[in-house]
Length: 216
Image 1 (cartoon, rainbow, N blue to C red):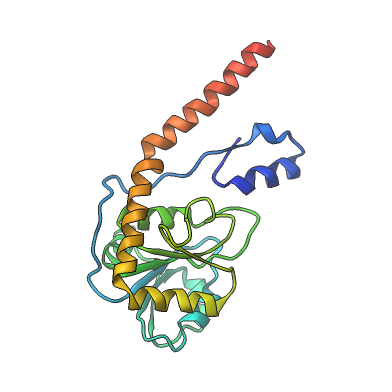
Image 2: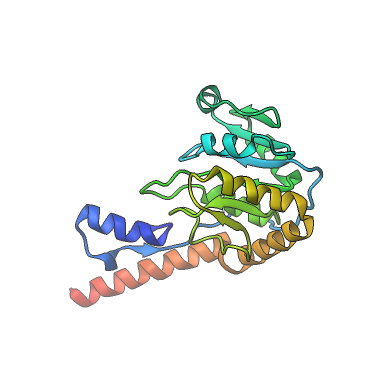
């Protein structure tokens, strides 16, 4: 079994009552085929996604911030959350629209709830592949992908004040945002390309086949 976070291996092994050694952490890959640094075209931060998103905490964090934030979410999520005036909400937009907003973003927020499964890696890695500084809670889906203060910022899950502080910090310090973004981009090249992912899958399956052959 290949999983996309280290903690998932332990959780699934316990839930399925299988040996831990049958589960392998294989870091996810970016969907961006040509990673490159893209400077922001404005001051707006972007938050996007569907699965496991904590829009309530983001809305609370955005309240009173002098920072424009663009949200891309499902229509059902937009209907149940009251976003403040500095947040522009788009629902169910085409992928091309999301990528255009991502390219111009001053930073990317990935607001996630704490779950027993990982989510958020696609947006995290796409943002890094475009040189964007990422802010996210420290949860099962981010702790293996973001090094706090090195290539992104991690905050406690559900902590609106901490999230507000991280957004304000990056908005006031474009040099920090660029440093984090460039470090994230470098990490993509080292660890999170499709080729690197495929090599890890081949290694894991090759080792499993070899072990099966020895047992036979």
